[in-house]
Image (cartoon, rainbow, N blue to C red; front, side, top):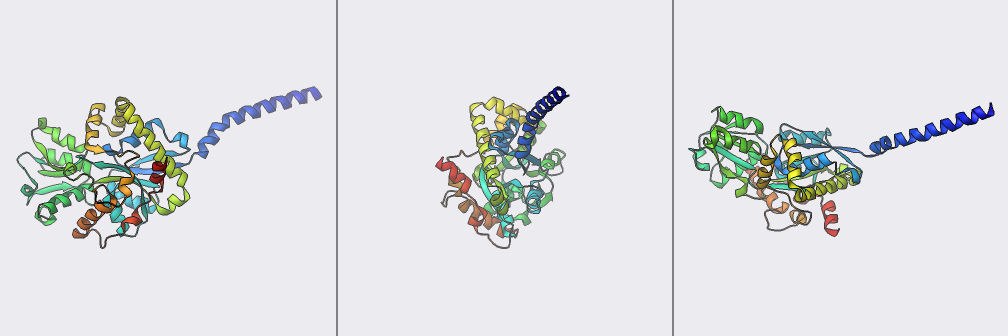
Length: 336
């Protein structure tokens, strides 16, 4: 009986050790907190698509769940309401949110549009001034709305000079192809879809963000209290993002496959669209946070953005730019 008990105890001990080994990965997974980050399909977010495919966050002890939105204008409300932890927004959206008193903080400049956002029109329309009195399709309270406002004001015009037709960015291509509207404002990949339709002879770009580099800047945003409670997670996301950015430089063709899958385009199209954005390197990022006359500085483009939003009466007052920024994580990158 004693021998049987010893044998049973030995077996139980072996079983317990085996179970411990099996449970260890599960325990590790549970120890890796998940951060839900809102996003839309946009070529500027390519490093995040690569990071997601490779799970470059794993070694930094964090898991990222990308939550796709069909309409990026709904993301600020989702972030403020707590249905997501962070979001990829354009800086004009951050200014708009700050004007409402929402405590959003930019922790990372992701990209700036360099042709990826555009006003597209029938080939018979040659300039912004030509669209006076015409129907223009765009998504209100979005980067498209902001680019249109910039274009109109730069040409001595306002929204009163056009007939706005509000729709989602993805719907603009269909509306133009059907002949419902002659002019649309959207972003990649929809811009390329519109220009290529009809054999590439029906539509063309009359103005893009290439004429105003830095004006439409995408940023990673969290609420201030989230950053205070989860600094390791925020840092881990940024580190994973930078690892993915490095992978894109070293293996562009493989990276293009990951990007293409996330965006629903071909790898060749993904590589082509990457020319329409600029993802700053770790060494360049602090330039966005520093006060300077450079349009890439949040202090400079923030003022331009604020002036446009004030004239459009989308905000009642200009927020304090410094209150929208948290450069602690980027500063650490510079020190490293």
